[in-house]
Amino acid sequence: MNKLLGCIYIFAGALLCVSCENDDLPTPTTPLAIASQNVAFTSVGGTGSVVVGIPEDTLTTVRAVTDADWATVSVSGNTITVEAKENPNITSRAASLKIYSGSDSVTTSISQLGLTFNIEADKENYLDDQAQQGEVTIQHTLPVQLVHVPEWVDITSTDNGFVYQVEENKTGAFRRDYIKIQTGNVADSILIAQGELADLVGDIILTGYNSKFNTVSYSASIQVAKDDKPYLVVPDLGVTYPFQWNQKSHQAIFLSGTQLGTFNYQNTAYSIYPIFVSLTDGATIFESGYGIGADFVGEDGITLSEFKLLGLNSSDATEMGIAFGLFDGEEATKDTYTGINLAFLYYPSLIKLPAQAAAKSNIPAALLKKKQKANNKLITPFVK
Image (cartoon, rainbow, N blue to C red; front, side):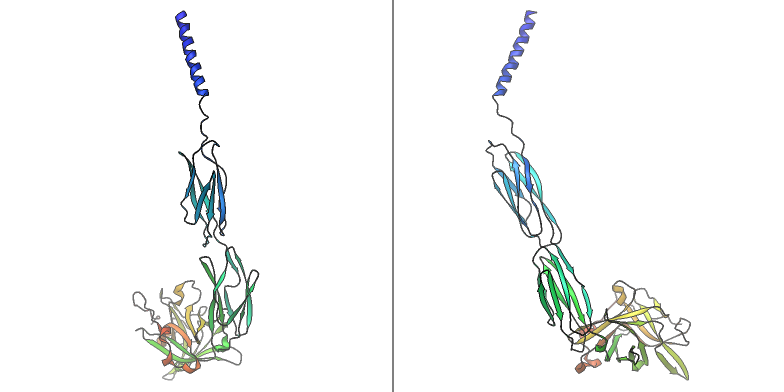
C-alpha cells in the first residue's frame, strides 16, 4: 500500500513539474488572417488595401503577390496596398492575392468591373436630303473619343454626349458614313445615310450575271408617274416594274405577281411577270404575296443596290435571282408559265452612276465582283 502511494506521489510531482515548465513558454502564434479588405474596383481603377492580423511582437515580414497583370501590390507593416489600372474592356476581371507571413499564408481575391458604354440614340439613321440634326447621349465610365466623323456632319459636344448636324445633301446621289465612337478598347458607331427617291430618278443600270457568270447589264430608268408612284423601266425587255419606296430604310420593294408588260410573238400576246428564285434552296416564286428589296447605299457619287429576298434574316437573302418570264394567262402560276424567259439575272443589282459616267461600259469593276457558289451550280426556274 505504501509503495502504491509512493508511485502516485511521484506521478503527481511529474505532472506538477511539466505544468510549471509550460507556464514559462510563449503564447502560440495566431494564424495569419485578413482583418479588413477593400480591393473591389470600378473600371476606372484606383487604390485599395488589405489588412492582415498578425501578433504585434512577431518579427516576421509580410509579403504579398498577385497573378494580375493589371494590378501591382506593395506592403507596409501588415497593410497590403493594391493599385489597379483602368479596365479598357466591357468584361469584368478578377485575380488572386496571396499574402505570406513566415510559414503562414492566406489568399483572397481582387476584382474589377468592366467599363460602362451605352449609346442612347438611333444607331441607324436613314435621312432625306434636308439638313437636320440628332442628339446622342452616352453613359460611360472611361473617357470617350470620336475617332471618325463624316465630312458632311458637324459635332457639338454636350454635358452627356453630343449633337450632330447633317448638312443638306446636294450631290444628287445617296451617301452614307459612320460616326465612330470609342472608349477603352470598345468601339461603336452610328450610321448616317442620306438620300431620297428623287436622287434615283433618271438613268440607272440593271445588272447581274448569266449562267456562265458573265456580266449582263440593261439600260433602265427610274420614273415617277403623275400619281407619284415610282417605276423601274427596262426598255430592252419591255418591262415596267412598279415598286414601293420606303424612305425610312432607303429600300425599294418589288412585289411578285405583278404584270410588267406584254410580249407579242406570232400574233399571241404573252404577259411578262417576275420570277424570284432562291439560290439557297431552289425555291421558285411565281405567285403574289412575296417581295424583293433593293437597299440603296451611296459612296463616291455612286448609288448601288443589291436585291434580296424579303423575309429572310440571314445572308441567304441575297442568294437569289430574278427572271422576267412569259406567261400565257392573266396570273403568274406554274400552269401559265411558258418556260421562256426574256432575261434571267443572278445576283441582280441596280447601279446609278454620276451623270458624267452613266454608261454601262463605265461600271466600276469593284461593283461587279463575281459571287461564285461553292458548287458552281446555278438554279433555273421551273420549266414545263
